[in-house]
Image 1 (cartoon, rainbow, N blue to C red):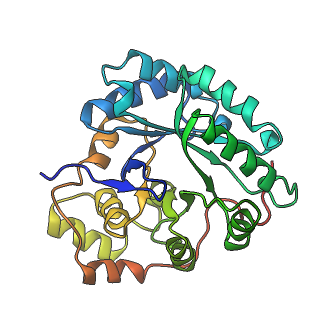
Image 2: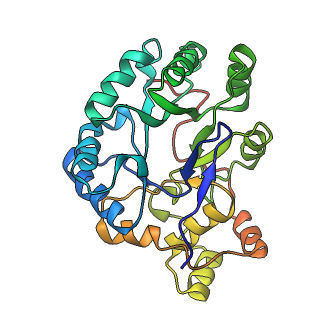
Length: 275
């Protein structure tokens, strides 16, 4: 079994390529989920202010036996807080019981609000103060990213976007790569695999490698150079999703999965969404 892989970000920091997402997990469930994840080898945890479980994540980290410097913790600035990123970050750190974050992301551009450049300037200051090691965004389209770069001269290290076999966002991936922005996949299993796990190519590869459809899809993300954060609170699934280091998909197999792309967005449209 090879070791879990890491990705070097353009600011020089390194993050695990596979982490645990905790969207929709309650404060109690998330403690058990993170303890299980750390036990099987995960070292990255992705939460957000909007998930309302930062206290649970903090409790899990506090009561775990893994040293803080081995963990990579991400949280996100909610839309309502784009005018107050310093205060919002401090609230998150207090809940997480941490004195710094590994990665802080703007959760949505919310273009109608038009505060994302101001928020980004706030994140740049927080990084300079050492409260966050790396800064990035979620759900930003190319024009939003270009504006950040043009107006601040600072490029996000990550753009976390909805990405799964039915919504592969290849143009966005290329744009990110051309600007040295790492693409990270949320909803990587298409919200439980509906319309994905039953595809013939996914079933065939699962049989070939003796893996589950979920493991094949996670491996597809990894072999496509993406950072990926499958979400689960089920101990067996958490372990299953991490047991992906003993096989790889070849170029032809990646190409077959590429054909599944339908441009099918399951989450909100970033050009329209605000909240």
